[in-house]
Image (cartoon, one colour):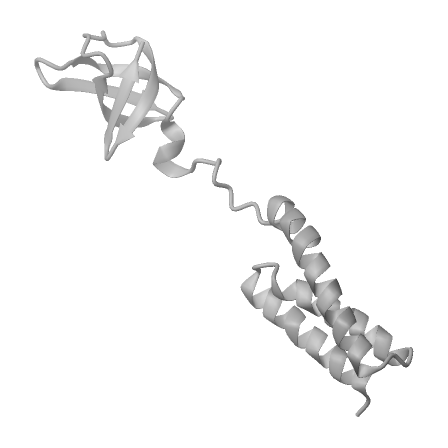
Length: 143
């Protein structure tokens, strides 16, 4: 087996590992192994192959990985889903909100939620309010 074939096998295994892990770390080493395979195919000595592997891996890890993490690894930290997506939305008071009588409900997209006023004020039925907070199953709203 030729040395360049070993580098190619290492590169392929690293790509497979990257597909499974999606950390964008193994791909940097796979690129380094790919360049080393190219160097081996062109007749470079083993010392140069290792130097090329180390330098290319380091360069891709320093320059390519941050780019990939920023633009390809969008874990949607800013996108709210499910009940958390209610914050900032408008709702209609379906039952008078009054903290002294422990009453208050709002309707959002056909769902009825228990609600309290953010400032403790009374909000009449039919008023449009904005949801400012979600605490378990109780919405805090303001006019």
